[in-house]
Image (tube, rainbow, N blue to C red; front, side, top):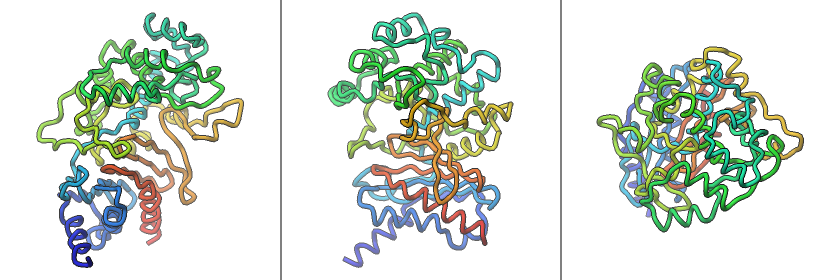
Length: 377
């Protein structure tokens, strides 16, 4: 038994194609982050693999590591440059694009959505009792629109399981939200997480730019200019040349690798990225490297105000969540397929992790503790 466990540990440590980036001497000699992910894969039976990236300019750390496999019951084969579906972290990119359009005076986030949505979409919302005149772009961004989340419909998941190859459209998903849910309250009064709100934001972006959402995100955020060369919209854009296949995405133990990516494509999700690329975007965004005006970032991070205490369920701002870990304020978002991206402003550091199969959110907590200790040395 001891020999077999030791063999697993050796596979985990040495079965990963490493790409260390710009590491300081501490990481080259004795890397606590690699030790952390190795231990999680060995001790947590639900986690088949982990890719992690640490970006901390003040500590001269830009490091990617991995442990384990990209598929359950597979030999350790993860690569540090292996892409994965970031799922709902796409919402941070969509919110960024909306705020960039606001900087260009092409919209106001306090405008009614009626000014930008198609007559068809507006009509569908009104027919089900939604007060579209009161639903603002801001309320879509911070999930206070009261619009039912199509992804929470049992019908949606049953349909996906019954026909995994079905190519979904934004209209179909909106129809499901209208047919299988109802308004969740008055706009701007309660928080209810809603992918439906973000597919509507995707439609708004397309209506203003005249381009696909994929092209709009790429152009508005400036993927090429910013060096985001390993980030793309799955199915809509081609995978970059020589890029490995994506990590298998799991939900409740089921592998959705072969399921058509349109199940999560139109603004609530859809992007594929690597840990270094995702960390680079977060680091750039929250150190004011994306917006033209500093006030735009302040708008993104302003606390959502509601007339009741339901906002305490999640501290969700505009496309980003905020929490406190080890006494540090943390800006973060999670994706359903196993991804977490977190920026810690006081440490000017970003931690991105992608799990094969099961989450272990403690990895962010422990990574922040390691960064804190390294800062004190």
